[in-house]
Length: 354
Image 1 (cartoon, rainbow, N blue to C red):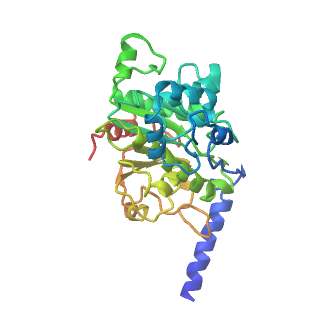
Image 2 (image 1 turned 45 degrees about the vertical axis):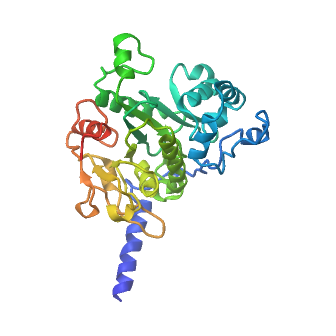
């Protein structure tokens, strides 16, 4: 009888997750973009170097980095010219070469921006860098939540820009296209920030947002991305810190044990598919923040029959380190200038907090 009561309670909570107004009420089902980059078939058929090129589907980021390191500059640029969508999305390829390839793929839309990944499949995926990724001592990666794709990417880019400016002391409004003294200050920043919208996010708050399917696919892509960062990291540079918003924290939770991060920050989180920090199986420091009026608080923190994402990362029993967010406004205000949450994020990104 006791077991039956526990099952009934869990089922009731799961039903609440699906039906509650603030929970998973409506949305459009999504099919995750997976597998190697577009253009891989042409890349595999290329024999311009007199041999097979490394298979994007199976070669590790370290193997990709070693392959490009053995090429002449002319050979690298020729591959980027012939296969921009492969080179531009190939984790482990040189950072500057990926910028070049993605600028070619995007044309005028790149407009001098440092685009580290561009995949036009599905709703489109992007990654943009703020700062000098090749020489940075610290790297922060923003992992966004629902409703982010190529059309809405600027929301994530704005978060990354705000963190970059707060971390490096850059005057607000300085971007990758800045000139003069402000540009020098930005270029010399010790911390680079990546806006990584590199997975298929849920649309709305439907069943995709209540389950982990998209997060599992996203976790695989995030892990490969961070391994690519490691393969090109400057000597002595720290492991990346992951800043995971909303459903993005589900992605980070599933990737935690393989992502090789120094820190994982969950904010506005519905759960990380774990009951505690121990369950994440990571050596990274795990942090959590939630604004007092963030609507995510109304989402039940349960996981039953594949629905829900488990314990609240800000709950004491979860074991994450607490971050201030009392002056943060709602679900999307964590990077607002002057907030305690942004100041705390910047300290973590700089590697100052232990």
